[in-house]
Image 1: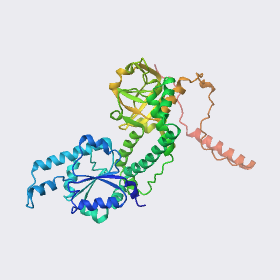
Image 2: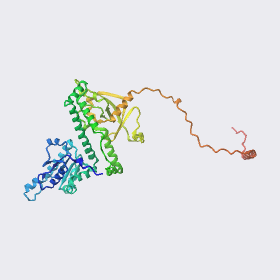
Image 3: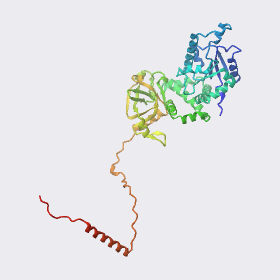
Image 4: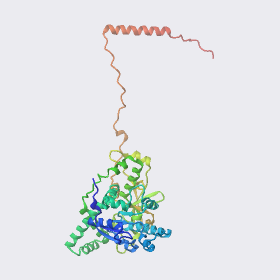
Amino acid sequence: MMADQTLFHGIAVVIDDEIHNPEASIREIQSAIEEAGCHVVPLEQIPSDASVSNLREVAFFVLDWNLYGATLKEAAAGDSIDIPAGVKEANEESIIKFLRELKKVRFAPVFIFTDEPVGNIVDKLKKHADLYDEADPSHILVKSKRDVLKAGIFEVLSTWMEQAPSVYVLKKWERAYSSAKNELFLDFYAKSVHWPLVLWNTYKEDHVPPSAELGNLIGRNLLSRMIPFDFDLSSFDTAFKTLETEESKSRDAVIKVLEGERFLLNNRLRGNMLAPGDVFKKDKHYYVNIRPDCDCIAREGEVQAEIKAYLLKGSKVTNAKIDKLFNEKYGNIFESDTESVIFGMTAGTTVSFQLRELLVEASGGWMEHRIGRLLPPYLTRLQQRYSAYIQRPGLSRIPRAALPIIPPPVSAARAPEPVLSVPELAKASNARKSAQGANKKASPKVSKRKSAS
């Protein structure tokens, strides 16, 4: 299945120092983007740090690597000129800085289309692992302008996306999110322009944090309008086969994805406000907060640092034990009634949280030890298991004597002896007597003389 080219439709930012030169090749790329119905924002230079935040809704970026060509041509006045090393270094530094700043506010494809050798630019990008991953398809694509013009801009984009399922999912999700967001605020606006105030007052009267509750309401309504999602990953056959054939690479990818599914790293959490699922690490032990969200936020007259955390203590589960407890049929880990096991919680580490003891302490002293947050449904399941544990009834032991007696295994049955007639029985008896007599004659005589002592 060919990738959907319309997923890239929207606003495109084209950064090229020759963007206003009618004879430049970048103008052909710009025209191709506009002919597809997209709007192009042309820029001659890297945008300032202050204006990067204005690029949050851009569909994709087209960037020229050498943003000094037009200036040098003008300075040379038609003559050849050597490019100073300082100019190249400054140009490269500005681009790398821009890519980093852009990534903070907008994760979107960046296509570097250049007249320079592609390999040289790729080698420079490889030095920055946070921007360009050589092992996996990056959100940064380097392509020569000549090849782009020959194949067609959207053909290049869709072909590239066939190797990057993460970009496909991002674009499909953004389309659903944009539609749901518009529907949500349009629906509430039609009910009342003051709807945020109505809800805010309701939350305040209920003595719950209004800001958090308003955010939760918007999130629930957005999700309800986005479901069901319309993803189709069946076309990524090559990527599927790669995961199946390269076992070590596949395991690393699976471990990373599992962490992203169930655990949010601390550098993605805002502020030091306690929340359900916050995971702390002291020495070799892990602690998870299972207190409900409405009790984790300071209310009027309270200090956030004094809010109590309800902590369960956990420890790392060894790989040998995981292998022993793994349930092949259902794909989960066998757990005792006194624990809740989170497989691959972070960095491939599986943690067993014990339910026997709940540690209640002020959260302020713990925040410096926070490493991340366990997410639903894994947090929800842990809370439910703890709730069931503290309400468990006490049952008497089963006496061992009451256990059913299981007889030992029966050995293989002997073949039944043949039924003999009377003459045959007599003949067999005589044969036994003869054999006994022969044995007596062959037996050595035992001396009855007493030994001298």
